[in-house]
Image 1 (cartoon, rainbow, N blue to C red):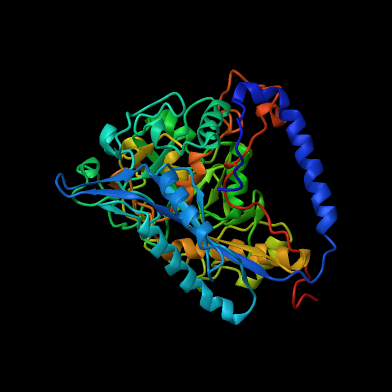
Image 2: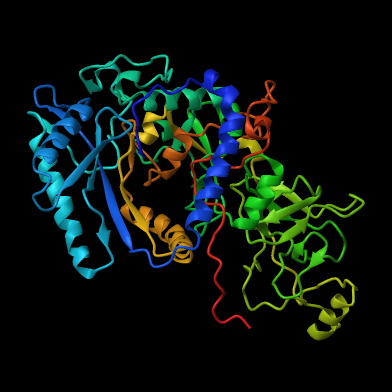
Length: 537
C-alpha cells in the first residue's frame, strides 16, 4: 500500500487550495528524479514480492465466517518478534493494508538475479505464513485468497468485533467505516475519492447466470445462438469504468455488457463519449438488381479483397455518431445505412434474436469471389472498381430467402445483465494479491521489463481466476482488476462524459471537465520501451 508516515492527512476541502502547487511540484520532482537516475548503469537486479493476507474469524457455533479486525494488532506483534530475532537468517517485514483485517508481508531483504535466490522465494513465503500463524487467535485463519466472499453481505454482523453499516467516510449501504485500517491515510483517501467524484463509487459486476439464479428465472436466451447477441465466437465483456450511462438507465441492479471489441472500436467509442452497444442489422438493398453491399475499410472507401454481405445477411455493428448514416461492423469494416440522398435504404435494424434469411450467407475469409457478374470476368470488375467505377454484383442463382418474423428491437435487451452492486473503496482495496517489484540495471532495461509485464500481467490474472465471488454472490467475472479500478475511480461526472452542472472545477486538472476515458487506477495507456523493432527493413 506504499510508504506510510505518521501525520494528519488533509481533507478534500482543505487540500483544494494546494492542488495546483502539488501538481507542479510533483512534475518537478519527477523530472528531477529522472535526470538524476537516467544515466545510471549496472545497478544490481533486485526484486521482491508482497503477499497480502486477510484474517478471518470462524464461528463454529453459528457456522459463520467473519473478518477479524485485528490487522494492526497482529502486524505490531509480528514486527516486535522480528526486531528481537532480526539477525537470525531470513527475516520478514509486515506492513498495514487498507482493511483493518488485512496484513501485508514481504521478505526483509530483496532477492537478486542469481538462480539461488529463486530458491529463496518459496522458503520465504513459507516462513511468512508460519510466523503469521503464530500471531493468530483462536478460531482465526489467514488464507491467501483474493477477497472475503461475504464482504458487504452480512450487514452489521460481518466482522469481529461487529461494526455498524455506514459512516461519514464511505456512506456505504453495505459496509461500515470501522472495517477500514485505523491509520488516518486510508479513511481520508476513501472520503477524498468520494468527494472529488461527487458521489459514491459505483461498482456493478455482472452476476453469473445459471438455472438457480433468481434474477434470471425468466431470462430468455437467443434462439440458435449460445454466447450472446453476436454468435458463439463473440465474448460478452464487462466494460468496467464505462457504465454510467447504463446505471442512469437501469439503476444499480443491472449493468450493460458488450461484444468483444478491438482498439479501433475503442477509438470510435471514445469519440461518442458513451458505451457502445452492438446491434444486428439486416442487409436489404432496396434497389432493383442490387444483391448486397461491398465492405468499406472506412466510410466511402470500398474494399476489393473481401467477401461482401448479400441481401438477407445479418451483420453486427453500431452507428457512428460522428459520421451519420454509417455503421462500424464487429469485423472492423464499415457499411452505409442508406444512399447519400437517403432515398434508398441499405440496412435495417432488427432484433438481436433475428437469424439470417440468406441461404448463401458466408463469413469474411471464405473463398467466395468478391465480384460476381454474369457478363464480366472477376478481373474486369476489380479493374473497373479500382478505376472508380462501381458495377453491380449479381449471382448466377438468386439467393434463397425466407420470410423471418422478428420481434421489435427493444423487446429484449440481451446486453443487460443483473449486477452485483458495491459502493465503497473497501470492495476493491480490500482485495488481496501477490505483487512483484523490480529494480532493473538501467533505464533501458526498466522500460523493457515494464512493457513485458504489461503483456504478462493480464494473462497471469486470467490464469489465477481467483475472484469468482463478490458480496456473497457468484460473479460472471473471475479477476479483481475491474472491481479495484472502479472502487477508486475519482473522476468527476464531466470527466466520465456525463452531464455535470457543477463543472468547471477551477482547482482540478483540466478544470475537472476534460474527458478521461478510464479510471486513473487502470491498465496502462502506452508502451514506453524505445528499442528498435527486430526484423524491420
